[in-house]
Image (tube, rainbow, N blue to C red; front, top):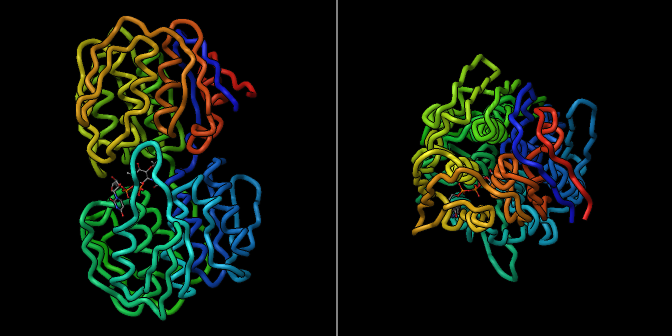
Length: 419
Ligand code: EPZ
């Protein structure tokens, strides 16, 4: 398996461009199943999860045309099967996002149950309960969800807990349902808002996205459209955290500072100097100023769980002690053992990661386990004394476009080596 080899100790400086948001691109690609005409999507990030989703849609018979400058056109007119097989779903849980659109447009779907993953059991019970409330007949057997619907009906749905892809699945399903659907306790993530904006440009009638109550008036059909994916706030936050750890000065372009309020607040609390414009963020850091922060993750607009591992790495080399409470997933601590291998003073008690900053981390061979944990190991490698080798970096390639190129552009000593 490919590895990343990092020689730590260099400050980061320069400018990089932020890519389109993975967690926006995935539901929007799935929404192509809803529209009568082709959906043209711009600013798609070149990520493994994106190619996996395009492969899934291609296997279902959709016509995909990949243009230049990060654009793809998806046409569901040629759809020939309504199956998301285990072989694909096991590599990417977000495949569950085809369930709602398939039921709404074609009245049938067979989707492998997404397994758990390193960060938790990741059930989809709320997706299934809500679709059943809209009239879908759902059976789960042999590891597959088999669902049919003779026309979904609008319903009043209250999610027991905030679920991002659950909100997105139901948002898409409700667009072609008969009548009005209300989603209460809906996720407010910017990626949900991006999906709603794309659906609206197809002719959907949606209000309330970005709040915890979304209302959708079903329509008979949706038309093709063109839509550009919003910038990736987690990629943005990851690179900002990298500079806060190494020290230096970096400007991130084509991003959205307004989507990162909680993260920018914590970076400033950690001692960083942050300046922003409409589509850029600059962070300057003197490593001597770095101090640990206390965080509790939660649904947007609270501090994102997808930034927890990166800040755990920051706290390991920051002055003082820190406590980060992970309130969204039950096991998002796989990076902690790996950071300990580098000499970090870090421990997990319940769902809280306690750290006491150390003078330095020592480079070591590490194992990536999930997307954001592997990002935190790369960040630790950037400050580790000596060489850090991060193995199984296919996890990273799922969510970070050419991470070694972007970090090299900022002055890091990082290279990818084959197995
Ligand atoms: C989305 O996952 C993101 N993935 C995750 O990003 C992100 O960490 C997560 O939201 C939280 O923000 C995509 O958007 C593709 P949830 P999702 O449903 O939708 C429980 C990354 O790093 N739950 O909001 O799967 C669940 O177990 C990835 O890019 C149920 O119990 O997360 C979790 O504890 C990782 N039943 C909590 O809710 C359900 O039916 C939140 O999960 C659904 C969820």
